[in-house]
Image 1 (cartoon, rainbow, N blue to C red):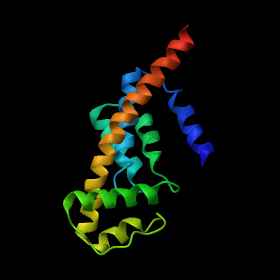
Image 2 (cartoon, rainbow, N blue to C red):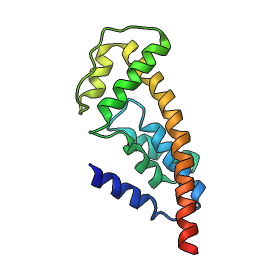
Image 3 (tube, rainbow, N blue to C red):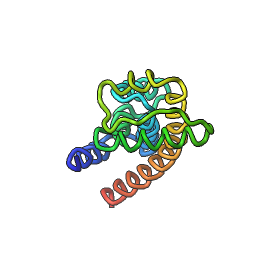
Image 4 (tube, one colour):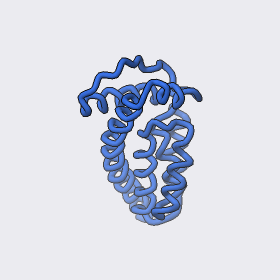
Length: 149
């Protein structure tokens, strides 16, 4: 898993373009990565990146903040956060693994579960967006500065 994340970071820093343009794309992908739509995150990120004109490749790389290894933890946390914010207590046991049937499992659990995950995902997604944007902007600008020195 560490190897694929390292490859993602390396790919990010080989992208051409203005650092802000790339950082905005990565931040968008980081936000979408927190939404409870595994399997569709890349498509959604790519579509939105095209519409709002940010770096599409960076947006796709950014969604990998949730993956097979981190998805169960992230989505379980988003569910807990969302139901806490909404003040609801749906009777739902979160699955241990995120697979192809994840979305159907969540939808079958009822709207309270899905809405809780979306609300939690919006909060963590917004935080992820801000952190990702400034971190990538800083690192990308620093890397280019060192390269040009």
